[in-house]
Length: 408
Image 1: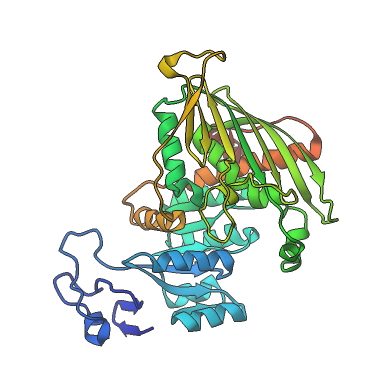
Image 2: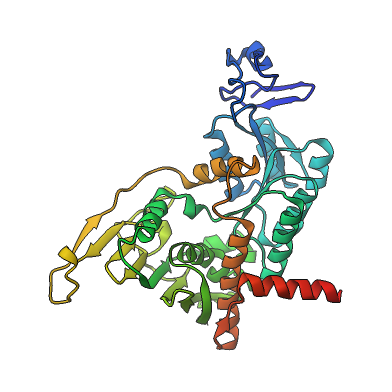
């Protein structure tokens, strides 16, 4: 790893890359042993490498770092992590390491920051980035509580600083194909959806990080947030929630199984269940082949039922009758939709670069992360009270927020 510093240029990468000098000049990178890589043509959108800092270089942070290394013209330039492991990672990869965001901003301002820290830190750290004009990709869930998430989203809007939320599954080609099939009317009107999120996490998983045994760290907030986000993406906004949960059989301070009945704006009905203590193959992790660390199966974890057909995901089998003869006495058959294959984390990071440069609108904006968190919060509240919870729409939420601000 080579680090080169000259005025206005910081290069920290072992990848072939365009230089960061003025357009039309050869990069100083070429002089110091990377070979000759001329700057891109004048007017090109890729006029310099995009510099990213990762805040929190644990398991998820390292996956983001791997995604950075998979992209040309994107460099990891800093790690913000006070731990010995964080410092060791920074040394190994030849990048600066800071204990706090404020320390980093006192020394450099990257083009974007990825927040891969515990959820409790997301809002505070996100606001710090926004105050320094630094675009943010914050891991899911966007915050612990929807009210705090709203503060972060609105502040980003006021400052015109791009904010994305890391619901990376939306960037999976499988989900893109499913979304296109639904939008194109291949299953007619969506009438019902079901999502399964069952798996068994070993005791060592919890012993390695005791916070995972605490209230608020159960599978509803840790795992179900992904599935809720995809159901919203594929079926629309959720308006009411009824939910139940059961206490952990292992004696932890949170739930280990939960189920919810969702009603959507469209009138569709959804059911969703989650458990981290059920031995089963029906979860996104074990059916999508998205992350090789999980053994794959040929099962599916989502079913989307429509008036003219149904779709299972992620195997993308479309079920329908021939010649529109919708009759349960008639044979029904399936066809497989075309599947793409690419790493959703890499796709997400590439998209973040475009969003940070104001070249694209975010697929998962701060508002989208907020809306998904509202549903998760409603599930948790319904589990606690046993009552049906209605989710405020965006207009109601904004009006309530304005009224609170007036009363302060």
